[in-house]
Length: 445
Image (tube, rainbow, N blue to C red; front, side, top):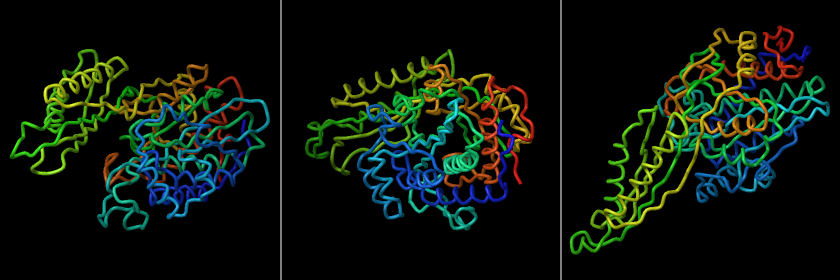
């Protein structure tokens, strides 16, 4: 047991806030987190962690939803913001970093995952928006930390700091994964297939907010939705809209037909199914038959079979719409998520350590109702005999997730750090502790 771990709660809380506000000010969308990764790597290396980048933690052949033009622009912006070019070289174009603290003593391999990407949404410019009037609002137009991943990255650094300072009390290995491209479910599969988690005995992931109030811990969220993210590219033929419209092949018309029919897909009797088309871009001019159109959409389902039902309908409709209008269509997968189920032993563990970690209410179950590519990571660990869990850390919010007015209760980061530290503490002594841990496990001054 880590019976002698001490840290200054006020100092750590301030450091968490500083980290979070820096990440918030310099947000980067999926696969573009070069500045963020650089800053995280710098902190971790200073703490004595061995660092792992690029192909060590991500299988390039499984990457989805990556735009190379935007990636190149993001690297240049990161350099202008002050990213360390040494770490950029280690990344080799692939963001995210894995860190290992090897105690040199026999013990479990424990992994903790923290996602780091921002959302493609414009942050509020209202004076009442706290990041705005306190001076840490987004410096990247159209990109903002409107989901809480800035807090996740900060929590990860807080955990890393305390564990590194108490390495002599630990056994086994601690792996910290600072994951890129969670938004759109683009990186989870690629990380899982890299094999970096294959030796993990215990895996933890968490999300802040998610309609859970400050002070509440949800140990076992339910109903993670499977999801497929897709782009449909319709390719037709341009023509003069007045002189010879018959000579054209209208990609926009095909796209509109596809949207109407996709939104009318019958929902399945066996469980919840969803579809959304979030964006459509088409055409070149008012008087030109549109030769191209692109749809960005997603399906969701309560399980893999239900999501597959929805996605198969999308494929059928896309092909039929293209045929109706004499155009071609290409479907490009942009992201995937599968469901996940927590291991009961870890649920009981979090229930036990939740109260002493600073949570005034510990709830066993609550509907999640969204998708998370951590499902691939959980599945990878569980399929190799390990145990895994994904929990929710409550935080009062100023607006819903992915909203430009979004902001968190920063005081909730410290309990999240203490929760993960207490979980690591409990797992240092097999068998897995199921009773609440005594107050001597993780203490603060």
